[in-house]
Length: 75
Image 1: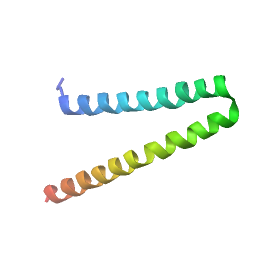
Image 2 (image 1 turned 60 degrees about the vertical axis):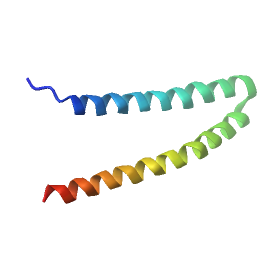
Image 3 (image 1 turned 90 degrees about the vertical axis):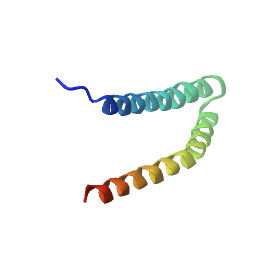
């Protein structure tokens, strides 16, 4: 049985990120809904999505650059 620590670290980081986003969107927006109502929760979702959009774009660009480097180094 081999240990791939890079794969384990990548998997752990992915799980932490997904957990954080779920916690932020579900619990955070759920609390907005509970205290302020439906319309405020919708506005909260819009604001959270707008705030996450630049981070998503940066992540996609970095992932694309990593993919290009791997393709270039494969040859």
